[in-house]
Length: 107
Image (cartoon, rainbow, N blue to C red):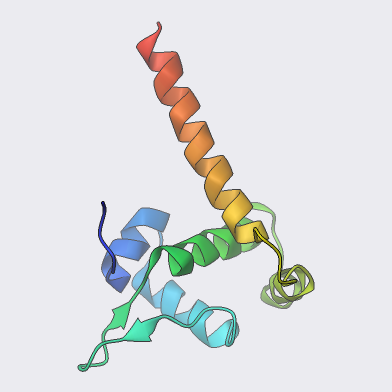
C-alpha cells in the first residue's frame, strides 16, 4: 500500500510543474480542487486530488484549454457517475505505463 498523503512539493514533482502553479490552480478551481490541510496549514493531497490535478494538467497544458474552458469541461462532466473523467485519465496513464514496461520486458 502506498502513501496516503502527499505534500505539494511531491505532487509538483509528479506533474513536472512548480508548486506555485498548483496553488494557483487551487484558487482557479475552487470547489473542484480542495486538498485538506494539516494543523500547520500545509496542504495534504490524496490520490483523488492528484487525479484531479492530472486532469487539469491534461486539459490546460496538453489540450490547450483556457482556465475558464477547463473549468467548464470539468463542471460539465461532474455528473455523479461511477467514474469521473479525471479517473479515466488516471487509468489511461497507468495503462500506458504498464504497456511501456511490458514492451521493454519483451524486447
